[in-house]
Image (spheres, rainbow over the protein chains, first blue to last red):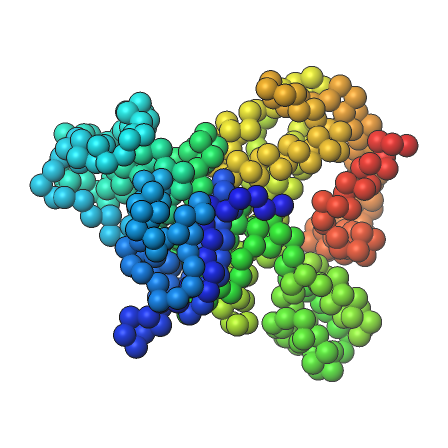
Length: 298
Length: 144
């Protein structure tokens, strides 16, 4: 099912002194996908982005963008030419106006799309006469996004692009991302702690922790694989409890049992029935539950 | 056609989309020959992944509900699975209405009835909500 890869990372390691930021990270982002990048603070997301952009060098392992190596100087340059990046900090030169920032940025990118720039400035209602410090957080994000989008990047790396924005601006940003993905087939790899945003627009997710990949899958496959099974027993289910525990995290209250199961949940349901349980329902599971389970289950 | 999806419900979004489009056909909001919104436009207006819309359309075509015409978009099939489904749905609606009324009169609560129906579905369909099973049942119906 997977075609070409926009991002491919194999066994990536990076330490800062005693601190191991990446410990053999593996992940891939297929071309044309919108991939959510999940992990707790300090999981290694920003370090990963920096390696991909050639801002820091990994100690070991491989990182490739469109088949180009992130550690080779000239290939890395080509990567940066084809990649738009919005960092967590979103800092721009404070003494410039919006127009000046745009004029300063354009010459770096031979494929800069002036029409797209105009349409995004209008769509985002950005006043190009304003100085950077006058922009609110939402507008600063939007401007950063304009800078990333108008170079007609093939890949967007976005480090928590919607952090601290109000819901209306978040929707604007997500819509812009869906728009470039649909229109130009731009691959988008973005981190966020807002799981519902990722559920809304991503088709893939990568969950990392402690510099390692915990889970990497299509969102639809994840949704199809996980179920929360709710059972009720006629008697105290103590015995059944120990038998069912191997299928996943289990909650037990009185005679009712709730089980979070991956993949073989039909087998779990059958076993519970055999143990005398009545299956009440098999609920779909949100990404949040899957995320929390992945962190606990490692 | 007004679609409202819930990306956080845990149900694959493409399945939600398929259900709602089928529902729109079943209830006559969409008629045979009607054009569905363009893939890009729909993705942008719902703010969901374009691949998700593409997958829903592909599966709907596979089930014979819609027809994808190269370059001009997606259309509800003339003899869509809808027409037979509509009649079945109408019949089913009457049967369910009678059943629910009987159970309510017998003193069961709304929630209890819902649970009963869900548990029965689970029992009979093996709790499988996968597209695979659906596709099979649909193929069987349209083929026969």
